[in-house]
Image 1: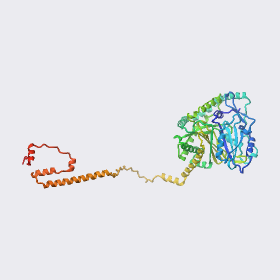
Image 2: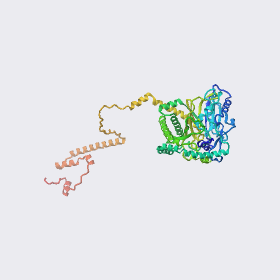
Image 3: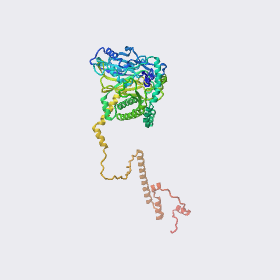
Image 4: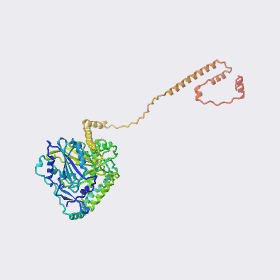
Length: 592
């Protein structure tokens, strides 16, 4: 019985008219020389391999009354005209025209009454090239499982289409026979789920014991993410219209930069996305002060597991959009990635993807439709600001009808509250970025893709400048300590406080006029006093010599003394003295 797991079914329950939950890839091929009848040959190629992948023939069958997750049943009659389609680009057939067509195709949901896949063979690319847009529902497989199917969809050697077919990579599905079996197996799965939960308690206890020492740290970690997560223009309810953007980097250059800075390729990808988003949001006056948070898918799949299902969980990682310089931003992305990995390592053993819940299709679908219909993403806080996924791709050249592939771009899913998805896949010696977004929220997503390339150039330039020999020598000379004589104690002198030198004040014109007037007045007063003194000396005195000297001394004016000293108090003279003075005779004093 091949019933969908809880994680597989969640991609069905979360689907709304605005958010179809399919993933895709765009592979560009360049035949040498250009050939005819390429579509007919591609259709024959796919038809010959329909029995090699169960996903080609299996379709969904709901459980009666929605008591459990749907199941996969086999479809004997396939309508290849529906699943394999032909399209052509308008001239000039460049990347802009291709991205526009991919955005239109990606906005169309898959028909659940049929097997959940479509191939679009697109001709009309410049230089005689063509592309294949392969779309499959996310409930069928995740990105890692999709990589395992490439050996069936395409070839890994030129001319392999004429050779024997590859072997089946996964066993065929076993379908339930009728409605009674669907219902009985759903109830049986629920009972068996309870028994598995009981038998797995020792393993859960071991996982809890392993994670218990870090529960406090992990709780604070998650709380800080929720508390500090800013809101951006990406975090709102979206429409069903899409925009698609692409860019590419040489994997050799990315690996060399990662090695030079002591980081991983994933750290470089996160730092580049952070730099591009920082620049984009700053141009739209929407850059928050706090760093953005990215939802980063992490695989739970054991090495070598090729099951066509989903074994992935979302982790959280900070995007250092608050760091302007490229190399410090790369260091911050590395620290954020290590922080996220430590949390995921503690919680990984507690994550399960297969849980049977009675009534889950009705309950979860109803909650999702209520969430989408109320446009709750416009009011509530986001789970994360954007999704960034890095999927390792094939290191061998892929061929389709004998033509080698030059690019292998991913196309993923935007959602309510997360209008932008950035996915990168490695292929041969390059990294191919695919950005898909709501066209009403992020209409110019291609600018973000272009900023990724420009930020990588700035990061390489900064690393090259820091790696120059003269730059290292300059840093070493600057850091070299001064030579100190051996065994000589260091003496601290008393600080010398020097008085600041007086500043010459620049006199104004009014001050100079007042000082000149004062000097002229003093000179005039001196002349008046000199004339008065000469006049007194020339006039005969009838007073006695000592009286005349006293009178002369009393009459001699001293200008500054009069101005500065207070006037002496007046002394009342006797009546006889006053009369004698009026008669011109000095009064008699005792002892005369």
